[in-house]
Amino acid sequence: MKKSLLLASLIAAMALAACGKKEEQAAATAASEVASAASEVAVAASAAVDAASAAASEVAAAASEVASAASN
Image (cartoon, rainbow, N blue to C red; front, side):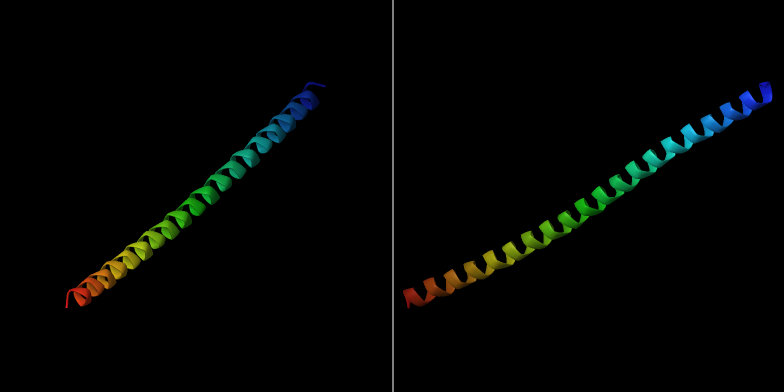
């Protein structure tokens, strides 16, 4: 009787421990996916800033040309 109770207790403990590992792994996977998505957003934001900066430079150059042409 004691052996079967000990065996049942060990099996229950292992089953409960395995359940906790799945949740931790799922949380780690979700955190990794969130970090990856945040990294992609940061790269896209950086590209947008670079594009806006280039456009602003082009507008400034065009404005300078217009001002130069108007003064002639």
